Length: 325
Length: 222
Image (cartoon, rainbow over all chains, first blue to last red; front, side, top):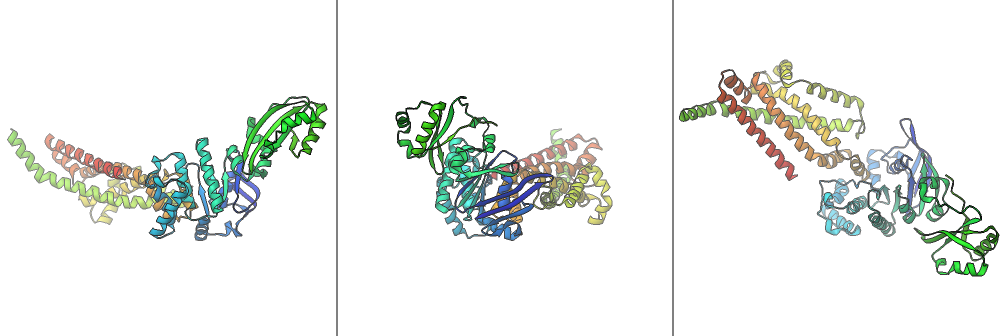
């Protein structure tokens, strides 16, 4: 459990973090989003003590980070792995030696290192690249090596600082699948800092949105994106805007995986005899499952009929307002 | 004519140049070994204490930075002359090969300190963060990460320094130390003996080529 309490951090006169409060449970995947300069990377670095916060407290399993000094802090960092946007591999060491580096720093025996490195290579699915040098690897493979290295000391938490931002979208997804798999298998807590909303949407269980050093919005991924806050719409920019018909009512209907099989629209048309048209429809993959949503436009006089039918059918719906930025 | 030329060449080569080459190489090698050691220590201190270093310390950084700049601002000939009293005190003499090694080492150490600093500064700060994140100590970060990554630029920097300080040994030679510089100057230039002058030049060219070859060889083996 990571408890972050009223954490503040300033660089010179610039206040980067303003009283951040968070409570992160073990074994979940968290997303930290925000514009560049919103303080998300700084917050991440406060968690493993790379950045020293000015005020407040961060406790990991009831250990206060700021109370740890030099050697204690170094030892504690074994519990927290970290990966970066530019992979941060030693270009002059091969894959094996890169992954072995943390264990060599902690003076592990040769056999133990060998066993663990091979295990990790299998876990990140690049056992054949054991002797390759980073420059011979693709971006995705490099990030796999970095993940293996971050996991070498069996950490409980994995911090990812824009870990997929430099990768092609499909490669980024395979890296996220790998992280999800590791999260499930090892029960490791993953904290993802990124500006790629699609990644956060699909793979994170809970999301925090930082704006100018404050947590501006937070929520479980599905509700967070289905009912986007002003701050989230701000971050999405034009992406989240749909031009809606002006008269009548616009309804957003949200269907879970089961409901999509129920021929709902056809039945709605037959049973309510109400007229409606589909403005937008889309499917989203969230951590909690697949969600299908659409925005339909109904005339004022049909609204009552259709909305009560939807409620009866236990379909989630809400009124969609024109997005104002 | 030909036979006469060869005989003269042989006489000078054996009597003059062999000793001069030995002196020059001795000056260069001693200077470079000491400068690499001294430059390494200073470079590491600079890297540690700089503003974004592992142990920022403005006073230490700025004083070493100033001293390095101060030494580097002297043309080598002026430095040799300016250091004469200290050289006499440290080495017991201010002339000959022994007297030249001290000022050359002082200058080359400052040069190498910059080479080390620049090479180590180039290492990606995120790589250092990564090393910190798995709990590496400062000592391990310097030796296992920063130095490891910086070795190629340190090698090319050292090659550059070796060539630079080879020419410095010849300047030292011209003002009192032995070696190829003094032979080319005293026997060649002042006695209008082109053969000696240009033989000296050619030998220096060969030494430079050899230094570059060694540098390249090590660089490639890394």
